[in-house]
Amino acid sequence: MSQFADMAYLFYYTNGKSYQDSAKIVDDEYTFKGTVAEPVQARIRVKYVAATAPKPAFVMGRDMYTFILEPATIKIV
Image 1 (cartoon, rainbow, N blue to C red):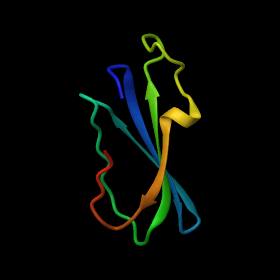
Image 2 (cartoon, helix red, strand yellow; image 1 turned 90 degrees about the horizontal axis):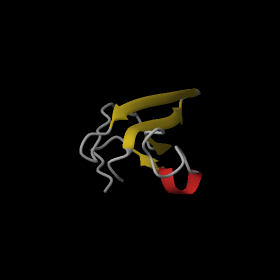
Image 3 (cartoon, rainbow, N blue to C red; image 1 turned 120 degrees about the horizontal axis):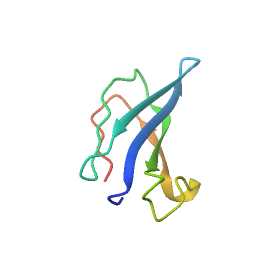
Image 4 (cartoon, helix red, strand yellow; image 1 turned 135 degrees about the vertical axis):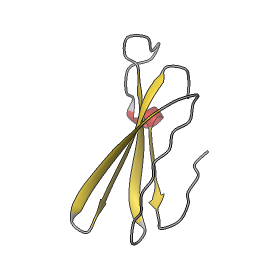
């Protein structure tokens, strides 16, 4: 990430419902807290500050990461 990253968004779908959470990025770090009952596919999307970013505000291949969200502590580096 860079100093221009502003927000991170978490998206997932479980038990017939979609969920979204957001976190402010500070010093290139962010945290989501919560629980899921079973493993589900999830995505994290990073948004850049449009006014100062040298890149477009969002690019699909660069700014989204798909992973398995499970009932455990997960650290993505």
